Image 1 (tube, one colour):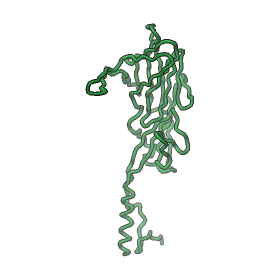
Image 2 (tube, rainbow, N blue to C red):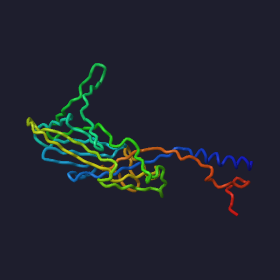
Image 3 (cartoon, rainbow, N blue to C red):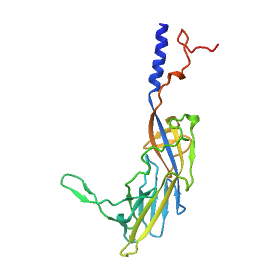
Length: 241
């Protein structure tokens, strides 16, 4: 019976040690001075429109809501609008054909019309789809091992934003908006420090914010026998003499 206890305890610890655990990588961003925070959105505004963002989602929502506050139709030219990430431009217009059923198809529009006092949402890209790796960021931190890496605009690993091109009414004058962001902090958290609230993730110590986003990941911590304290003849940790 003593031998059974001796062998059973390491087996249980081995199985427990190999279970994958869940962590969250939280990104905090800084945004251009032409924007400001209002409630749960980041806002850019000019004489004709209001553009709002809420980055908070898994992998980061780079899309935006475009509200027409003028008295004329506004035409957003997707062919000249782009998502920019670390210097690479990604097209919002991709000349795609969509199908609603076997008999109904429609072509993607290069220009979208937004009537007065109305809004449309433009969404195509995530900000960061792969886990960011850094030797200074523990991949499987405990509560006491949580470390935050801070970045400036000069050394940040991720710079992103949108270029939005539009015209008002029948005028041919093209207006270009540039909304810029960069990652200012990255932190890895164990699942015990985060909780799921509806469709959003809310940190226990700080509320989710429109200038943040996250990546959920799992990591398997392998069992290493040499870290176990030797057991005595009764199957309990051996006392040091």
